[in-house]
Image 1: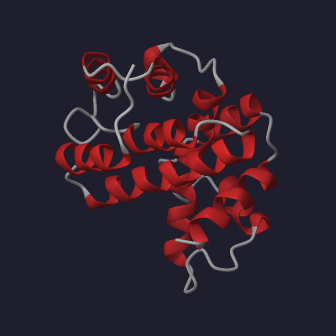
Image 2: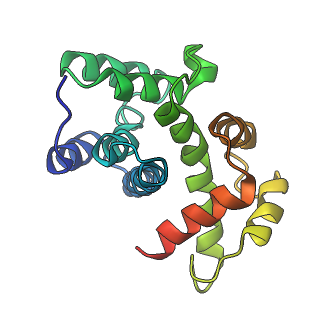
Amino acid sequence: MALPTREKAKELLFEKVKDEYQRKHSEMVADAMEAYANKFNEDTELWYITGLLHDLDYYAFPKEHPAKSVEWFKEWGYPEELIHAVESHAFMRTNVKPQTKIAKALVACDEMSGLLYAYSLMRPEGFKNMQAKSVKKKFKDKSFAAKVDRSDIQFGMDELGVEFNEHVELLISVFSSE
């Protein structure tokens, strides 16, 4: 099955996702996924593109998300690993549990990227010098970034076998270098 190039995947993102925040979120998740691919010695292109396209249908079909993306990816002949990861990152809706390392990483990175982005907007330095202990306080404060599903993050980290600080520090290092 054919994986699109980064260029083609970015074109798709801009074609399907009109919201600037949603694009930024997808790019952040892609960067986080690439970092995990490097950490685990996995296919960086597959992991990056999976992260970039994981919410491709969300802008136009939020209530059906990720069903439309899964349908498109099957039509376009995308790899099964990407399809499973995208379908299972919304496991509470799809009843498809993440079974692969890439799928578990996507669950761990998706919502955490949103929480870290929200926190970065509050800080004059953004991601620079952000500390895991400060993020943990925000993580525990359910009123902060209230739409971020902490249980999804925890589930993803548990499934992936990474500790909170390790996960947050990796993502901060990725996002602070952008």
